[in-house]
Amino acid sequence: MTITPLMPVYPRCGVRPVRGEHCHLMGEDGTRYLDFASGIAVNLLGHSNEHLIGTIQRQAATLMHVSNLYGSPLGDALAQRLVDLTFADTVFFTNSGAEAVECAIKVARAYHQHAGSTERYELITFNNAFHGRTMATISASDQEKMHKGFMPLLPGFKYAPFNDLAAAEALIGPHTAGFLVEPIQGEGGVHEGSAEFLTGLRALADRHDLMLVFDEVQCGVARTGTFYAHEQYGVTPDVMASAKGIGGGFPLGACLATEKAARGMVFGTHGSTYGGNPLAMAAAGAVLDVVANEAFLANVRATGARLRARLEQFIGNYPDMFELVRGKGLMLGIKLRMEPRAFVAHLRDNHQVLTVAAADQTMRVLPPLVIDDSHIDEFMDKLSAAAASYQVTEPA
Image 1 (cartoon, helix red, strand yellow):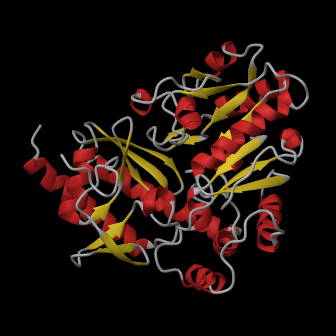
Image 2 (cartoon, rainbow, N blue to C red; image 1 turned 90 degrees about the vertical axis):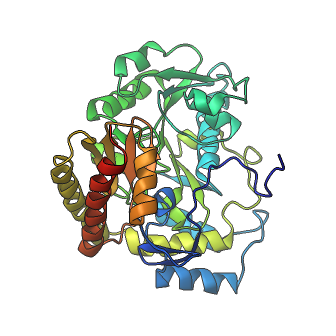
Image 3 (cartoon, helix red, strand yellow; image 1 turned 180 degrees about the horizontal axis):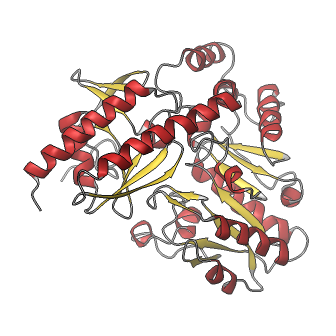
């Protein structure tokens, strides 16, 4: 068999988008799709936000890249905005979520090892987590499907059940450097960390001088109705990985940390050729212009509540297909009573709505954060039609 020019690591579907218009995508054959996937929680302003597009165009015509050998006025400004908006005192910019998590892992280890505790390098992570596709981040993710073919894994990670504080505490030992956890698991099925669990991890970290590292790559940047999801729990991390929505579609990640946590990140300890380039910084600045204010966040919460209420009412009509709705804001998951990928494909191919499958028989609903009631109406009408037609074409 001849390999394809694009390495065949994705089972790509037949949808081939060539243009975006607000909350819709157009395929190369002209088919119009309602986009409730947002590039997996990336296109939070939709596909044609004039402010974001104009900012990127102006910056591309001015300066795109110079490397981190030189000063960065745009990077300085964006880092200051993020520091002002969050718990963090300092930021390192990356190109992706996986790189942001990699940086966070290094920060957690360096915190101890810079002070001479070279034996403290292990992070306790949690079952069904997804932290990325690099060797370190798949090693941090306790998912056999991600490990197969890439053994041996990198040492330095122990796994506990998600939301099981006692199990996490039992894993603490002389090599423990900290905890790495998603406050809300995305790929794992839109499972929320409980307040008791996240508060308990913070208390354990304080008691044992450990780093509490949050992975908010998917649940961060206004997705749940606060700027970062952990704000809703009243729990502050030491280090946090962010990405996806922060660039609104332009590749960008960030590792945020307190001054204490970043004490080991000194000259020469980390770097990136492209990270923090002027074009990415301009794009993220435009995103923050729109989302980093209470009016926008309140609208995400209100819109998410309306969508969730509609979904919870709807699934009662199909108790044999749907079980429950999970999530916060506009990071929602519908748990099916069957493997979700076939239904996601049916909704996409027959009713022109894009969603995302996840673990635990869950269909993720991740629309742009700028949807209005007309988009909710369209989604619910097509979801209802898809459920009705799926029962006919796919009998149990």
